[in-house]
Image (cartoon, rainbow, N blue to C red; front, side):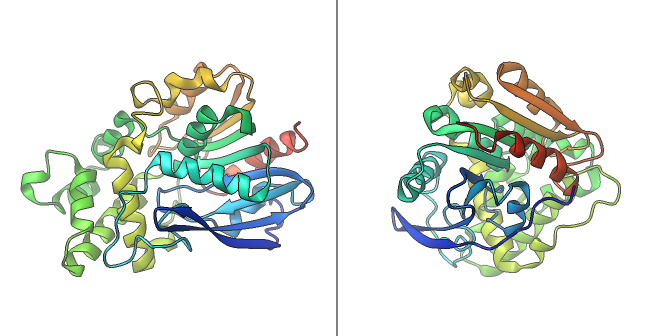
Length: 321
């Protein structure tokens, strides 16, 4: 399946969410359709037209937004000096609620991938009455164990590339929290240090996302401004294990899956995903009786192989009361 047409937004704006932040948002599809909110990955990614291919524009009112400090939202994490203290998961959850209220939505389908699946799970557990259904792919829950895997343990699969990633931080920090070490470099007063750290972090991101044959580097990392904003935000969140400590038991959204009772969901995950190994989605599925797990045998962490199963899932929930 090629997916649905990307279409074009029929409404857009900038929402003042407080703390000096303005969040960019777009609405496309059928204004009278089933509301759906799209939660992009990263942290530090952005809303793109390609996300709309997963949702039938005749049956869905599709809401997209750029999370704090990234994409078209302001201020940008690519600015020379930026304060990220008001950018945490609780802040992002509050932004989703403000946007829902601003657009007059009562309940909506939540579609998210990678970091967006973490955010979607946290949102559904905090606001279950606002969620019709969840469709999550390339599932991640951003536990401390997952952070350690991404920054250290997966180096067993890619030892040469991981050593280069580790050795890009000062020797005294190489045995510690690598996400925190990179976060410090990414805010260094010297722009050369900042941009070198952004390039090194994003090079590693491109290495560990897939074991799928023919995997190609993501062209978005060619943009220096995107690299810096993305690396700053993802290290900010990973160093804090997703800021989930106060949102889920032990900071583990799987342990809070009982809050999802009555919410239907589909989890779509790639067999070849080494960035977020399949056991993450498997464990979540086992703790969430209302969920279905679809394993895509030839997929890694994202890609066109997800289009058909994710679209099939959203098609099922169009018109969900």
